[in-house]
Image (tube, rainbow, N blue to C red; front, side, top):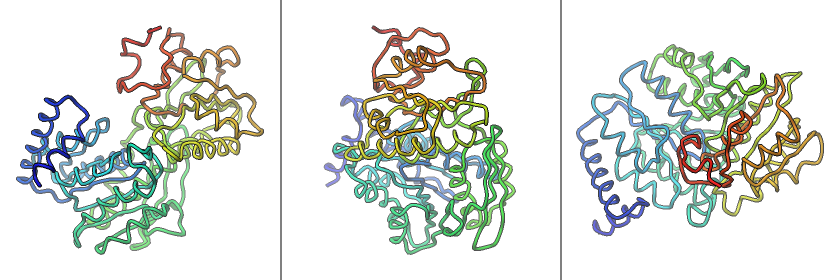
Length: 422
């Protein structure tokens, strides 16, 4: 049985045989190392979206109270968890982002370490391709294993706005706390918010205690309220100082490529959200772009297609098109075959629609048909594998010839030897 389990574990490492053995050995060392340590809490965060921002908020908050260890924000969980655990020394809090994209992968993670706190953010059909998780039902089943791993004394903090997450929460018989962006539901809820170029203001309220938390942060977007609400719930459950959360929020700034606001060409602005894309994050990012849109500014949406949606791909891209039709940006630059479906759903209200198969062609068409103007806001939304940064490079006057629509190189294009590849 143990031999078969080891063979199954090796299948999660998509590497040559020798490297697989190396990583499995390193993983076993991390498992033994973790048994020698104790934490006040081992917090594991799951969901199809919001994991990275929630881990960031919790890391900054708990780090103000006592030494805290968190997973690397840019590394796959399969490699990330062992690497993080091998860095464990005297830290009292562990904040572990727990991503999955294959069946059985959550068991793989739980074989290494188990949580005392689970934060469950939400479900979208990302990784729904047949070779991955296959369906929303299977996505929920796999991620719910983390909830089921909690003992009776474990704490579940979950998003009450998500039907799938509420369903998963029913299986936990211990303490559970819910949060919501809608004050009609959730024990911790968003009462008010305001998004500006300088950041976001949140007013959060606890139904159990009646406490009110005023958060000011440079993070951009109402949806970040979910991460602060999860931290608020943890703070009250563990009797932690709320002032530490308020102070941590003031010191936080957007992570590059995750709704980071940058000066762009000709006096315009770029809202860069190009590292990850799924239906939930696209909806949230578009809401931020609309909130930041000035009365005199044009809103230019540059959007690549969402990947790994499997059977839901056509439906979700058409839904995205209908959302864009309601928001009515001035210009839409749609990139990739599936974004053609989104563009077809737009019936009125958008001055110009540009479609192209790849970012380079899209940028060339934009330069011919439109010009960036002072005060314009560009919202760039895509995933790391689509490498939409090539659109930016061309508008800035850099030479780019690589027209691949998708690429599995995880480093930025600027460091790629194929950037000028014909």
